[in-house]
Length: 236
Length: 242
Image 1 (cartoon, rainbow over the protein chains, first blue to last red):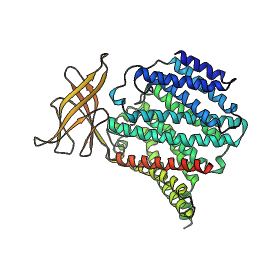
Image 2: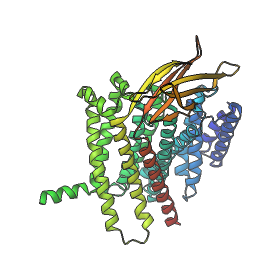
Image 3: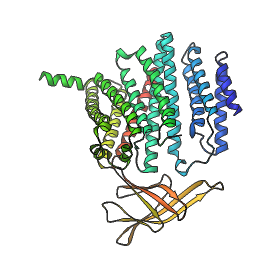
Image 4: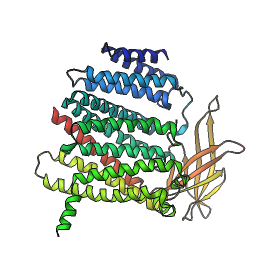
C-alpha cells in the first residue's frame, strides 16, 4: 500500500515538478505488476484494482498525448489531479484477493475489462482536453480531445464485442438486460452522437468540449455509479 | 411529390442522425431509471423482447417502444446516408476512407438485426439436474442426460474448476457426447447449454441454462465489421496526419 501512497503524493507534487507524473505512473505500473504476481491473475476485479488501473491508464495516455503539445502543463496538471483522486479513492476501498471464479478465468474477460478501462481513461483524457479548451480556446485541445474519443470509442467497441462473446460462452447470450448493459448502451450512443456531431460545423469548438466533459461524467456513472448502486452483472 | 422529396431530404440528413441519436439517449436515460425499480424486467432474460413487451403495462415499457421506433428510423437513416455517401464520393481516390465509415454502419446494422432476431426468437430455460438426470430439450425429440459432475476446490474451499459430462439421447441411443466447462458450453441443434450454478451438497447438482440465441452469429458479424471499419478509419486518419 505504501507504493500507492507514494504514487498519490508524486501525482500531487507533479503539479510543481512535472517529471513526478512519470514517477507516479511507474510506481502504479509496478504496483499493478506486483498485485498480478501476488494473485497469479490479472488484477482487475473490484473497485480497488480497477481504480488503480484507470488512474495509471489516464497518466499513461496523458504522457502520450502530451507529446503533441508545446505547453503541456495546462493539460497534464488536471490529469495529475484526477489520477491522484482515483488513487486516493482506491486506497479507501478493500482489495479483492480471493481467487477468481472459474467463469472469469478467460482471455475474453481479461480483454473485455482491460479495453473497457483503457477506453474510460481516453474518455477522461478527452474531458480534460475539453476543460482546457474552455479555459484557453486553443483548437489543438479540441482536436486532441476528438482523437482521444475516437480511439476510446474503438477500444470501447472492442470491449463490448469481447464482453458479448464472453457472455455468450458463459451464459448463452450476448446481451443481458441489466442496468450496466443499459448504461453501456447509453455510453455507446452518447459517443456515437459525439463523433457524428463533430461532422457538423455548428458543434465544433465549445459544444464539443462540453460534450467531452459530460461524456466522462456518464462514463464515471457507468463505471462506479451503476456498479456500486445498482444490482447488475457487474456489481462490485 | 414535394412532401416525398422533403421526407427523403430529412431521412438523408446527418442532422436527422443527431436528432435520432439524441432521442435514443433520452429514452435510454429514462429506461435506466425505470428498469432497476420494476421487477417485471427480470422476466426479460427468459422471454423474447417482442413477446415480453406486449405483455407488460405501457407505463414501464413506453421507453422501449420509443427506442424500437427510433432504431427503426435510425436504420433507414443509416442505410440512406451510407448509400448517398458512396454515390456522391465514388470518384475520390482514397476509397478506403470512403468505405470504412460505411463498414462501421454495416456493422451497426448487423448488430441491430441480431437484436431483432433475438428479440423475436430467443428463449431461455433452466433445469436443475444431478448425475443421471434427463432434461427434455424444447421442441426436439432429443433429451439431454447429465452423466457426471466434477468440481475441484482449493485448500481454502474455493471452487477452482468444474466440468459436466452430458449425453444427447434419442430413443435411448446416444447421439452425441459432450463436456460443459466454464466458458465452454455445449452447442447442439441451435441450443447453447451451459451451467449457471453448481451445488456440491447433499448431492452434486447443477443448474443448467438452455438458451436459443438466433441473433448471436449476426451480432458477431456486426461486431467484426464495426471493429474493422473503425480501426481502418483510425489508421487512415493517423496516416493522413503524417
